[in-house]
Length: 225
Image (cartoon, rainbow, N blue to C red; front, side, top):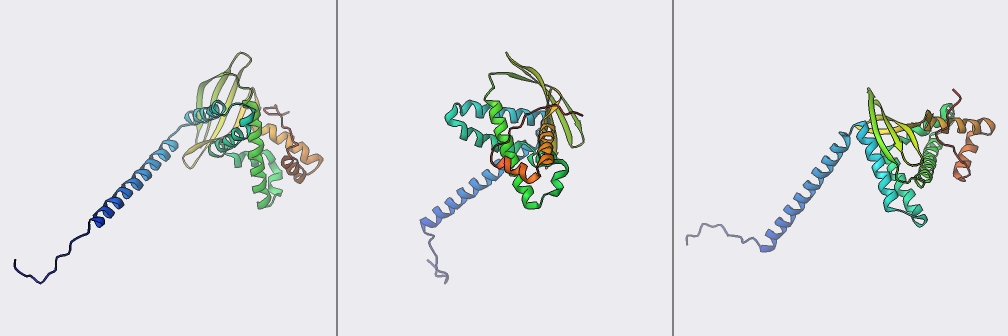
């Protein structure tokens, strides 16, 4: 063999395996990113009705999988996650306070929003316990720019009522910001009762009562207006 002056270097087998391992890792990472992108795209492509259906479906799954008093804490935790992903809770919290929102500092607002989520979670958890197989029908959908309303009907042995879900589009997702049952708005119920407490005491007292879990809110109460 002619000597060319170039020393041949044998690539160790473990080097090949390392490249193969890295290649496999790269494929896995790319696949994961593609999967997440597709999931995000599917989420963002949901219309208002699909968003409401998804919210209701997730809540019913929680109720089905976490039955019984012993699972109440886990149930509430899962419900809170649904609220944080499916509900525009910041807007609901702000509108529930009305003009009093402007009197709060940034820190107090953040605290109040967190407490409002817990209040909404507990109220929803208590109402869900009463669920006994009622059927929900999706009647119509109306859109106006970034806002939408999905009309539904809840029918069961002891209930026959209409619920309108109001949604807003944010970052390509439709989020629930209010619900109206038989003419009574959820946000309006909170606002009317919170305003009464603030008028008789103070906003700080309202927040303290929410912290102490001594505040009982009547949902879907019709306002006087």
